[in-house]
Image (cartoon, rainbow, N blue to C red; front, side, top):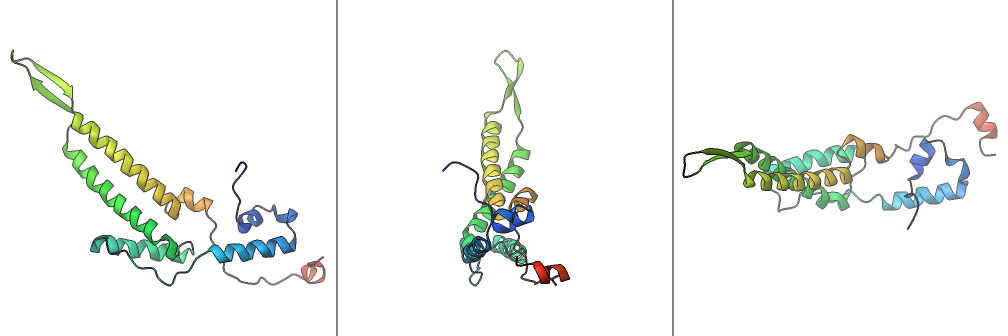
Length: 171
C-alpha cells in the first residue's frame, strides 16, 4: 500500500493538524486505538531467559509499563531483545581478546603481517547482533528516536474549560 503510514490521533492532534477530522471520526479513532493498546495483566519473563536476564526483563518492562507502551503482546519481543543484547555484549568481550592482524614467519625467517580471518568473522557476527538489538530496541521504544516516533498515551484528565470554550466550544 502506497502513502504515509497512519498516524495515531494524538500525534495528529499534537501537530495541530486535526482540524480536518470530524468529531465522529475522532471518537471512532480513539475507540480503535484504545482497543489495540493491549492488556497488561500477564506480563511474565519467559522461562528460556536466565535468572539475570529475567531480572533485566522486569526492570525494562516496568519502565515501559510506566510509559504505557507495553502490553502482554510485547513480552516475547522484549525477551528477544534481552537475549540478543547479552550475546552482543559477550561477543564484544571476545573480540577484544582477538587481534585484527597476525604476524607469520615463512621458512626463510621473514616475518609478514597478515589479516586475521577470525577477527573478520567475529566482526560480521557483531554487526548482525547489533542490528538485531537495534531493531528490537526500536520496536519496543528503548531508544530516544524510537520513543519520539511513539505516542505516549496521556492520562484521561479533563482540562478546565475557559469561559469562551464553555460558550462556543461545541460549535
